[in-house]
Length: 290
Image 1 (cartoon, rainbow, N blue to C red):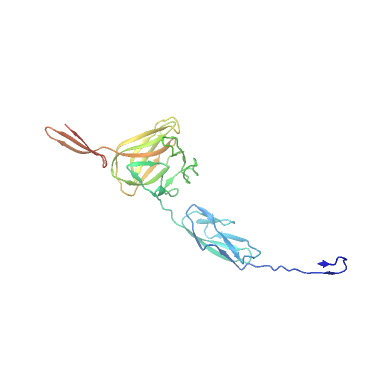
Image 2 (cartoon, helix red, strand yellow):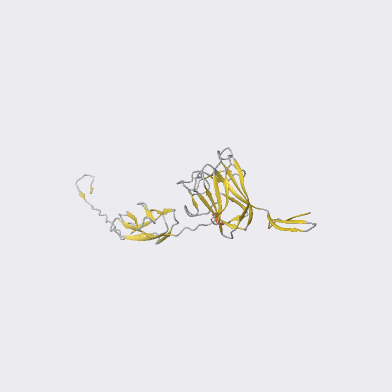
């Protein structure tokens, strides 16, 4: 309303604001690929852009595969495909986005196969998920170091520093994709144990190749090497090494596979005893004659 200064005249102007109604709802993407056990956000918007009521609700057609909350936060729980539906609060318009959770494939950590002979760091187990690449009894990485898995990894004060696997329990295991040169090896493991007596096994392609007992080293970061000698290992370009813990009470830093001495030839005559032993493909033969 407007009026003159003397107040004797007045007029009124009525302003009407027209409400802009929602005509549709749309996702930013029609399809999203989400890795298992990962999370993200899904975005949707109403049309037209200047609509008054913009509220959208989200729902999952199968929340055992992918769940969604009111903010659009999505979580992939298992392999499969399901739809997330966005519904506008005004008008009940809907749109669908398909979420694809592909199967998890066990892969060598960092994309590189470990090798036998060679040294394999315990913390460099295969990429994957619980029950596929590793099994750990705890719900989180107790050491909170190096990798985002439930396997317990901590900083290591052994020579070379780096990391070690700890908080071990009976029945826990780790897998490593390895390229094996078949042969006879001395197998070593680097361990730490305040009390000693803890036991663990190494297997190649589910065949046990060595069993170990950790000695009493004095502390969780006091390290010692335990060995098995003359271990025959078969395998190939894509074998699996398995570390299996049978006890608690120890830490593991690494495994090392050193070519052993295998008897190659014995030749005996009246004058000469000749022994040929093959140390490794690279070191050649050792010859003893008498």
